[in-house]
Length: 295
Image (tube, rainbow, N blue to C red; front, side, top):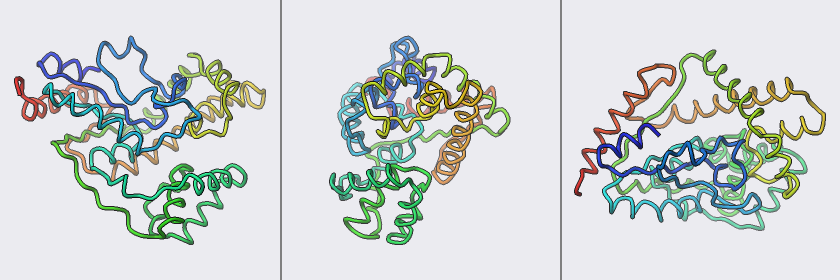
């Protein structure tokens, strides 16, 4: 928010586009730490609440959504702040991945999803590695959604190379955040788990479970599985926190691996008190160069 407000103070309209593949679902507010209206502080946000949890929503739909946002923002001389933790969705926009060139078939996807629900991830990973080793080498094999999608592509076109990125049609500034102090990072994750639990995750999880199947991709967000276990008496508060923190630490490790391979114009340590100001100054200079007032 500080960056968007700083750009606004410079006369440059800024909007936030969330590239979080779980914040697109309505009702997943606490589990995904979706910003409240108060937290948005008048800054326009996109990529939130685009589908009900039982509606399929892929990176292709996300790309279409973003394409409806960017032209109007550009016409006002503004900039988009593409933020979030779903690396593939970030790449799809910033690198111009040819999402529409990849095959898809709902019937194949349904069979794979059923297999995942019945037999777990391990068998699908083994099948992917055997039938499409090239795809398997480029996929996060711990992510069920990515493995299912890769198998869908492999089923339809074999182990062919993915389409080359087309590039984004405008200037892009890439800023990455990490936490060098792993102990500090784990403490932050633990604090967030406490806030999530005390902030309504149980009520949210119970309400969603009453309306939708718990196997939906929307509910792979960290917190729901643990909340249902706590609600049903399988774990206690300490068990919820331990499971939540453990999954988030593992997820952070995978994110770190993903983004380490991505190019960055500025890499910041979130544990450095000067990091926010450095990021803001870099982004302001970039925006003033490529989105000057009056343009």
